[in-house]
Length: 217
Ligand SMILES: C[S@@+](CC[C@H](N)C(=O)[O-])C[C@H]1O[C@@H](n2cnc3c(N)ncnc32)[C@H](O)[C@@H]1O
Image 1: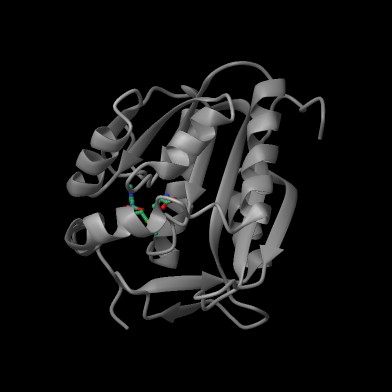
Image 2: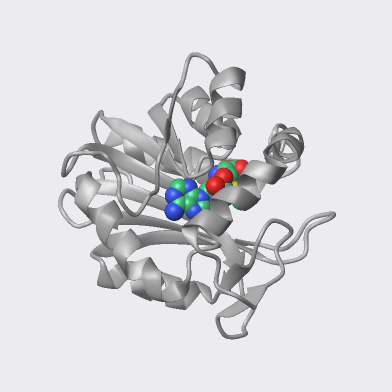
């Protein structure tokens, strides 16, 4: 399968944005474990100080809004201009910016937390170290990172024909190791088996940048 470039990914999400937004609006209702992992992230962020959180690859913004409802000061960034337009329309009280998460318009240490909720799934594996380096640059010491992705269920790293554009399924240990090489320490992980209408196991990694140790970890 061809590796998706940033332009391919942006155009592919632009094309499906309206449909995606409809499908994603109530995405968390059926998945208490997804809500639990987001709630754990939010609690860790809230109890280790105050600061801004970014949802990188926010799509139409429903995860950003969920994080806001969990008490976080959060904004979203996405590669797809149409997704950003839809997010701004749906959640006018929140900030959404167009951009790529490997080159953020943010000062060093500007963020207290980062959520990448199924947004690194199209990133060619050899590019991921530079993404994680950018996450490390913009996070303050002790900042938290939450990754959600498709897990490879015991198999190797593999591509699959995701409905929007080619995507990757990662062995959770390999992704944890790669993020570890960028300076992130694992706090915990959650694997969820596919629900109705879903194809693959879901992986979640909750990590912290070296610096300050969280009180409730
Ligand atoms: C599967 S969607 C997930 C959207 C959202 N996080 C959610 O919870 O529904 C993946 C999103 O990541 C965005 N994305 C992919 N690569 C990106 C990049 N390098 N920088 C910013 N956004 C990116 C896509 O445009 C798309 O909106």
